[in-house]
Image (cartoon, rainbow over the protein chains, first blue to last red):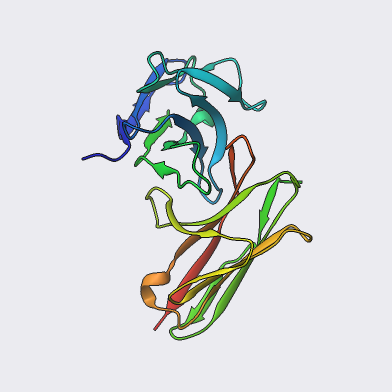
Length: 115
Length: 109
């Protein structure tokens, strides 16, 4: 499978615990995005990387959220001290920048439930 | 005000109907535009890019009006399988994608 892969698919955690999600983008893609989506809303931008450089982080994102893409390939998103409001679907997408009108390919997401 | 706004929906239409969705964006520096489709509890997938001259793909037609900063999607001869949420997506020159909240379409027999 050469698509975007996210792990785990589902995560249930207790409030206050830390969680980490992984995204493996399409191998030749240089741009990687993280989004969060709740029911009835569109994907909300969290952060994105060009290769290993984090280019932008949403101002709405608290300091409990951190993302890395250490070697410019896979990325991790960590949420520390989870809160119930963090419950959402976390989507990763990748694309190849440098080509006009490039399509972003999404992974199937990680559904987080904080109890 | 959100950067990308869509018709709130939901749209409930009979099979064979023509339905149109609109989307407006606030960032005049936006460079590229897309419509994505999202099925329930699935990831978004590209439906079509939107070009300045307008473009058509089978029953789907997308239009862009840069002066008014809006994008439209027209679906002709609706099928049951068109039932989904349609997301308007706007990219800046830096490649950052901003999504609308989506418009839900239900096509009924």
